[in-house]
Length: 222
Image 1 (cartoon, rainbow, N blue to C red):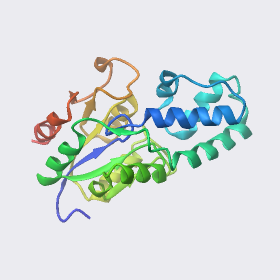
Image 2 (image 1 turned 45 degrees about the vertical axis):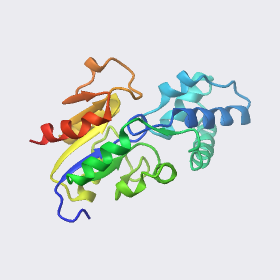
Image 3 (image 1 turned 60 degrees about the vertical axis):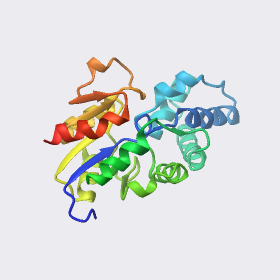
């Protein structure tokens, strides 16, 4: 898969490589309007991000007093995923990401993705933003029967790359727990969607500038 490269960097997607919160907010409010619910603020929907679409929809319904409606939840999950496939126009790449990926690939490190975003929308937004060529392995929230923080998706990404020495890069508590449970070092991007202070999140390194990431990876895997 990676031409004999045994070192790898695996990334989370939303809040790590891309700021997709505006598109997620717009998609959520499209659903809310369709079903007669009040809209959410950007901060509200951002706080729901990180544990996959089912969790996101559960949060939406809980805030609107309909958490117990299983049929509505299933319907909204299906409708949201349908919207999500084309929810790319408001999403941006974080500063420095493209350059960091180029440097890492040239080292060379194999690059992979492990996200709770469904695989279809993940691949769609990667393609839209011109990042897809960097990631031969993409494990999404629907690739397995479990999602992060279960370590199985991250382990599947490692196996798909055929890697031995791996750093996981993410932005949240969920990512930190996933890395810990998989037994991998974790680099925390501090400008993403974490819920609490950096000091409360277990990490090997923290960074706010992607220009620093290649050096961090080299240090961690030294």
